[in-house]
Length: 134
Image (cartoon, rainbow, N blue to C red; front, side, top):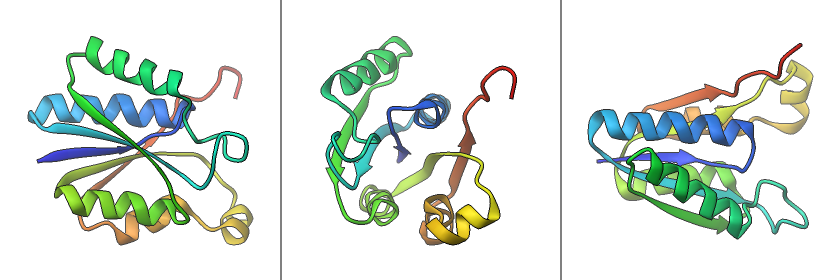
């Protein structure tokens, strides 16, 4: 089976990546890292640069995890993550989350909520470590 990680080049993505790697190692499963975004780096800062992907591959290698990294530019990021999890028969989908106010969720929707509700496999939502002083 496969652990799928929804990864972005930020603290949330890093937390999800580390937890996904830990889960893949613990259960002796494959790891698939997915960087799905709605645009290019000029428009969407969640789109990983080639150097970010290289850094992720090096980090995973240092942890002893073999992984595939996919990048996709799509209209529907939550839909893409759920579709990839279905495609590979994922045992687990790991995502990073951030705190949002109820109004923020109402106005902007919730990517994490859509993934949690739509995924057929278990979803692990990981919080990034908070910055000191918060």
